[in-house]
Amino acid sequence: MTLNRRKFLTSATISATLLALDHKSAGAMIPSSSPSMITPIVISTWDFGVAANQAAWKVLQAGGRSLDAVEQGVWVPEADPTNQTVGYGGLPDRDGRVTLDACIMDEHGNCGSVAGLEFIKHPISVARQVMEKTPHVMLVGDGALQFALENGFKKENLLTKESEKAWKEWLKTAKYEPTMNIENKLYDKVAPTKLPGNQYNHDTIGMLAIDKAGNISGACTTSGMAYKLHGRVGDSPIIGAGLYIDNEIGGATSTGVGEEVIRNVGSFLVVELMRQGLSPEDACKEAVMRIIRKKPAIAKEIQVGFLAINKKGEYGAYAIQKGFTFAVCHAKQNDLTIPGKSYY
Ligand code: ASP
Image (cartoon, rainbow, N blue to C red; front, side, top):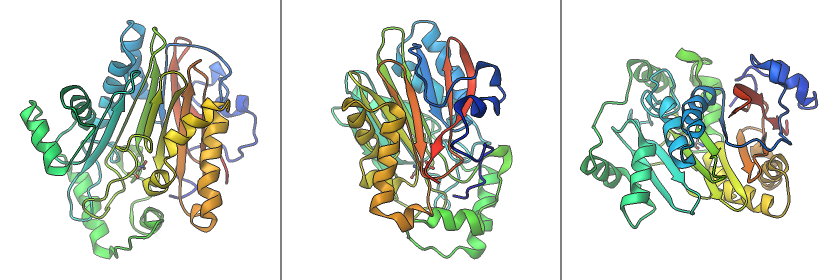
């Protein structure tokens, strides 16, 4: 990932108030880690989280369950063909196949997940059905597709003309190097700087919500790393890596180079750090620092961002690189994006 991929203020040291002022909902001046205890609340990764949060908010405002909120929230980017990093319209793998990863987790510790799922527009809903209708947690590839079709999901082509074009462009020069920072190389050298719909070649939506009853759920869904090796699975569908919820403590989710998140069991780590008393932002920061401390040279080249919320509705985020944003929605503010703090 490049450093200039998102519109943001460059200094992480600028006060939270000023950071909030850079955004279209500046009036609210919500700091980047909130001391407030506003629930219900929904937060999600990246700017495209704003629209997703609004869909989730409808459920929360009506007194619905956080599980329904996060599922319906992430349907928005999953169904959006201009979003080339999630669901329908996602950039394909090296072989031109759109393979989706998603997971969901509720307040009881129930969870479901799909990985490498093709032809289904809403992998998050398949993940939910894995959770609710099977004794298992995770289904992958053909098995996940078979399960989806058996449960009434429609088989659809998910490769849009735009994503096919981008893939064919990549194929012209693609030299597959399965290194840690391949996405960085792809991004810098091959992939378009900016894709249609103001989207980028790689980003996951991770969403965390607390409902009126105070229960926490989360969802995470992605098309994964663009032009990945067929069969590659990132952190996003892996419980504990891309998403983790503990209803006593809080929840966490991640975006960025999934391999590093998996190696550090990132989201579980963030929740455990909150259990030890860290604020959501400090917990995210410590999880990022683990990655940086273990592999400083590689960490310079890649992006990983964590987003977390605790039981009180306090939230925070931290990323390796600048440019990570997240969206917040609660009764007083429904369309805010906040630049997450970062190490670099
Ligand atoms: N974490 C995702 C993956 O590694 C990609 C992303 O968030 O950009 O598949």
